[in-house]
Length: 535
View 1 (cartoon, rainbow, N blue to C red):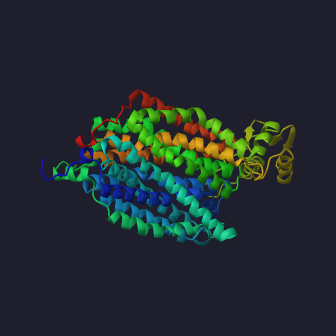
View 2 (cartoon, helix red, strand yellow; view 1 turned 180 degrees about the vertical axis):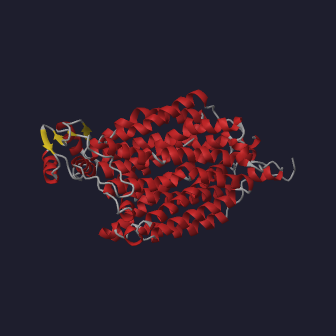
View 3 (cartoon, rainbow, N blue to C red; view 1 turned 30 degrees about the horizontal axis):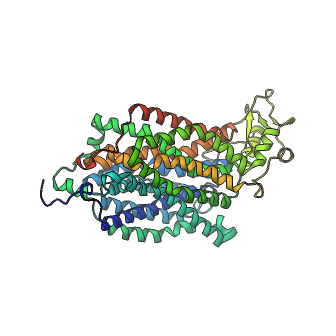
């Protein structure tokens, strides 16, 4: 080894200059998550703006699919930028991802809607969303590795937990900016005011680019490159070698999938559930989610520090177990506290619909004729957030049972009147929302997420050798978060629409938690004592 190589962080601790670099890295990542999460927070409005050629239920599912499109391409971004990070270095890969993300977000803000561009509008929107996904695919791995390779060995969990905080902080920033823009534009927000948060991202892009330019390259990468040990073919080394591929698969199915679902269940599906299913006013729902994020953000740091003392695996397993046990009760509590009228009406006068002549309420091209009495009845029930069960009626007859009252065929006014008489509200009554308890339930979901997410970055870095670390950890992380977690809101909401059961979509996270827990218990090894500079 050359004498010119500087000592690593593991031997001399971390300098003040390096702390500033790590802070700058985290701040830049906050801005990138802000860009990425804006779309999720505004999915309902974007659905109306860009998918107005289809029915309302389909438009929202389409908006969720476009949200998911950014997640679907994240693994490809992980491969592209992971390879660059392992071959060229962490710094310039970082810079490329923030520029792509920022410009894509800004362009969403100036993109005309369906009324102006027709079918071209959603196509361009999906393309921009995919560019965002590619960029974020290269972002997380670089940020986690960059911080971990600067951190002292016995504080790696605590230091990398700052990167874990950035996702929640980015979401919090996006919600705060949206609330400010709602206040500023009033009733015009749904028409054009929603564009302002996207346009403001150009300012964050300028700040982030300056931050990335001021960063120093990772000392572990410089040491490896000076010794001539950096990889020439990181993709084939990472995934063509069974010993490393086995670890990739364990990290994907053992904890990345489960962790991803805890995060999107707590931060996104809970918001969709409140606004789209329980019909809580979006501003009220955003404020309650913001409150829960402010309360629980320090816990991501705490659980990262805790994993430095007791290990990564126990903390991760605790989150998976709690998710498995508490997800269904948590969303029942949300229903009881956010829209108690729905909960009481369902128990007093359950709705039963006949599915025989119904089609699935999803029309991808706007051409399906969802005009049978059953289709019309289910569309009205879904639009109003009315939970219902499906039960066969006499052949050729559509029946809607509201408590003991039976309606044959579809009469919109009669059905609306019947639902109102049975106590089903058009929207959540602001006076009846138990804000404190809703926030408490959201805090519970976020605590589960913090347990699985807080120590994740440190464990991922510790699992893989330096020469192929960027590539190896980026792919399973983004497969888990992009495909398994990112699809969670879309799949869960579609299952709700299909079955009429407002809690049915929760079977998706439950299955993922169970698989992750089993794989982790059987195959995942503890990593917190690994020396990442000798691997």
